[in-house]
Image 1 (tube, one colour):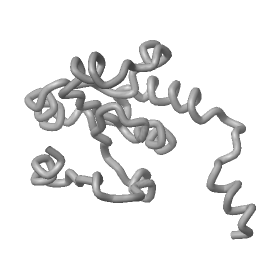
Image 2 (tube, one colour; image 1 turned 90 degrees about the horizontal axis):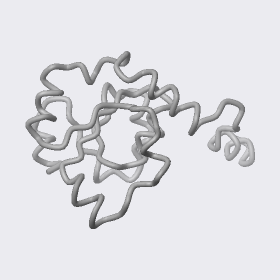
Image 3 (cartoon, helix red, strand yellow; image 1 turned 45 degrees about the horizontal axis):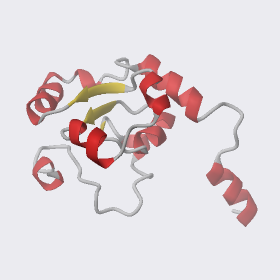
Image 4 (tube, one colour; image 1 turned 180 degrees about the horizontal axis):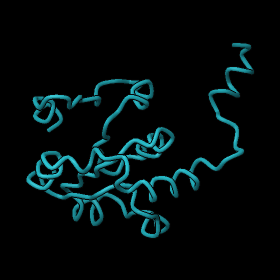
Length: 129
């Protein structure tokens, strides 16, 4: 599926990359399913579109979602089929950083609380870089 989506302009399939964190500040939109990678994108206020084409199966057969996740404010719109994904991309609202900004800000505060040390900065200091 990632290869099929990569044929569209400006969609980059990152599934084969070992490290994608250098891309996060430059993303116009992150399309993901259940990956916690979107939490890293919160640091850069990256708009998110959750494409959960297998949502029912995932919830029943793969693993249950964490209880706390049901109460999180929406960080982005959720779509469950390709037609809806295409419509969201075509309309373009999903690229608007104002859409779901309040939810992303709330989640950023929850997952990246102010005052916590940035892990890479701590590592760099330890290594003397």
